[in-house]
Image (cartoon, rainbow, N blue to C red):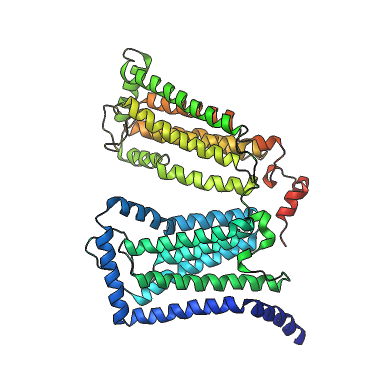
Length: 496
């Protein structure tokens, strides 16, 4: 028993010796939060006056300026639950793929703590939101502490500690400063938008710093108990994992010929726009008596005759598959997974350029052609864009075709055909739903196919997203026989 106590005492003593200053800061943050909590609960008059005075003054300064309110809302969204959950979830999945289970557990535990502390303390304190003359921010629940400020402090701080080892030393201080700036701006927006008092944000920062400190030092203790040396926090949580937590190695050139590639993309974009404008103008205004005119007349009328309440509901949800939020979510999930599995930036660039080109080509050609919607009831009501080409169909086609192009040559597993099937089924379902709902003609669907084929063809030729496959970049999912992995991948996948 004495030997067991000595084994446990040694890392604990080592941990305490190296962490005294850090523990003092953590305790200070915890004590500061406790004092502030008592003052808020007791409605201490000086604090009450300062909180309400600043809330009223900022509301008078900010509320008359619409563009400023828009910017503040955009910044505050960075601390919202949707963005935080996406960041942490993508990071956890990427770490698990890289065999960094301990870091993934750290992120999960740290994030879960913030999710528990925020609503619990809000319910206990039960503080009302600021009462301002012009309400310009949205909120729900009680006021103390600020959930956005707490979540951003914990999530961005934890992500910084996890991925700091992947950065060169010259970039670490700028990264720390940038993270602090983002957290500070998010907290400021909560006050400026009139949804939190100053003490709500300060309390959230103190609580977040204390919780982040506790989990970080607990992780250090975990390391010490396993015989790993204690390292300063500015080195990150796991310096030995620098290779694994790096998104991808530095690539000399994202494009084979950067200057020529940029010129080719610009020229290609203009040519695709010309093709879309020519085809769209023809089918919209000059196709009378042709097959296209017959198709655009018969198909919408046929769909109109097939409508039922159940089909209306089904078509509504199919349409949602191709809207902006769904396509953005798919892209924001797929691109980090590409980095986690294949460690290359070029496929990510390919997908990003695909979606940027699709959006810009759709908006430009829709404005130029300005085609009316089909002459039947439009179930989605008036739309801000014209009918040709279909933005929903084009976006769905582009994202799933781009994903299939990236995935198919990179694995020999049977499920690569699933992505090929999705590249057919998903756009077909969206196309049928959009035409059923009276939002597009069949030739609008053709325009979306034309946009996708031309733009992705140009991008594939210029970017060459799968060039690394020919160079031997084969991840663990490529083959059933894991013993054929090269030494570098085997080393990267080894868990200490």
